[in-house]
Image 1 (spheres, rainbow, N blue to C red):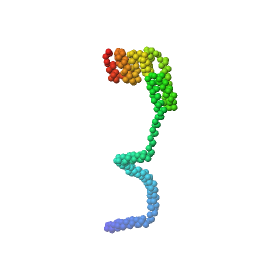
Image 2 (tube, rainbow, N blue to C red):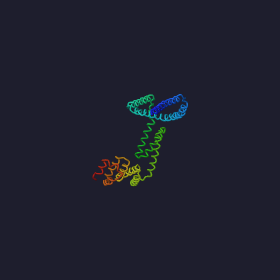
Image 3 (tube, rainbow, N blue to C red):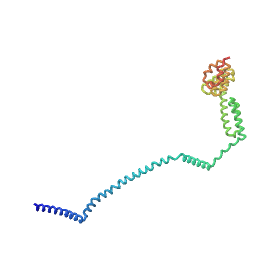
Image 4 (spheres, one colour):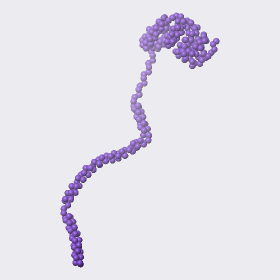
Length: 285
């Protein structure tokens, strides 16, 4: 028994001794063997990975880099408008002052325009022609057409060289002559002239109506109805004082016309006058 035990122990120890030796021998062989195939494998396996990594790395870098720059720029550019808006209004006032100074300098450089020449004083003939024209025109306004015609003719004979006055005189001369022709056609009696004046008043030709009523009053000065219609015509023309004067004569001659005057639309321009109220409210005598 002891021999068998000792043999077993020897075998186990020998096996234990042999195994580490074999392992160390194998390790030594591995260490001595060249590492070329491993390097080839490593390079063969690693190179595509590196190439792929190199190819993939710049793409995200190119995409992300501008974004980062853009964001950085936007972040930096954001405070700039705030900085521009914050300065006080003194700079604006200063710019305005500079503009006004520049404008003043430009105006100072510009030459001032020369004043217009003074009008020439009228000559002796021009002033005499103007006086003669005014005199003839007054006669025309008064209804003295024959006298106005004669004065305009004398003016044209003496001062025909004064072109402006002569042209106006010719115009008014034709008017005076046409009025004389119509005057020869007009009726002679007061009633016919009054009827003609009423027609012109209703037509709205107040100047012709006034002329007809005035002609009728020359032939019949105490006709109350003619004075009344003459007052209405003058009120239409805006001659307030003359209209009140004619109305006063009409009411003195015929007080019952006050009732007609209160509602007459031709006397509408006289109703705001205190004299009109006095004439209407007075008791008939």
